[in-house]
Length: 394
Ligand SMILES: *Cc1c(COP(=O)(O)O)cnc(C)c1O
View (cartoon, rainbow, N blue to C red):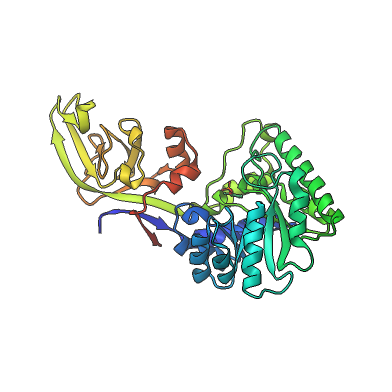
């Protein structure tokens, strides 16, 4: 096997789930976000681990991912976050997936598929997404009345949850979140005024949970006779989202401090040294010779390139770990290889393990480090780890 792989600590994921569920209790249920192939960590390994940790609900991207999750976790509720594509309603029902819906055509296709399958009134649960300000998915509050008619008593569809996504739970002033919650509160009032009842108020990501929103969400849910559910993703994989420095007037909320101490990284991304060579001063390194050895150097070839998800622009401006030390990347990153400078690191040889994300000796490299160096976020770092990087449970 080409030595470029990701080790997935499924036990750490189980424990992270238990920690998050404990943090939310007794206020809210926790859904385990396993969308995007479990944030690049492998749905196959992570969905069952979340269920072993106690998750009753899993959140996936698509019907395709939902079908995979269903075969891995026959007893779990599976929520399809991005809705379903036209023509997929029957498959969603067949595999007992619960779609998030917000478009009339989605409800109509679902109702038709449910009737075709002979579903009894109120037997097909739907989570209705409300656009409380993100302008991504969700019904605008002004367009709710048309939606209500789809949940008439004779319909096979049942409004199981009302859902929204907080888009700025990590921001310092918290105003956007307050405004979104106020809009949601109003929508919930209109839903009960229309004679509809939903069991769950499904709101909030990792930042919402870690910032202590479980209790206020539960209070809002209770006012409408509902229960609260949160949907953390990143935290489940052991990465704590970064909050604005001025969040909560600079005082770290207790739940955030507890999360920092308790959450364990789930993924380590590794490769190996293929060979080591000594080059004289003046040797050019990699495509276009963007790096020229300024002195005699020792260079190690590593089996990882941009096709594995190591961002090409990191060439000559980031480091990997080998022998417990930081080894600078030199020259351009190739599709399948990269070169590190091990001149100052004694004894590096072919077969040595190289860390892209993880810990070695006293050093660590995190998804946050990659994200800072490439101007992105840890979510993207995890999800762009290439499909050919084998994920193995350890
Ligand atoms: C991805 C996602 C989440 C989880 O977000 P994290 O920041 O990773 O915790 C929650 N809800 C929705 C709708 C999402 O798309």
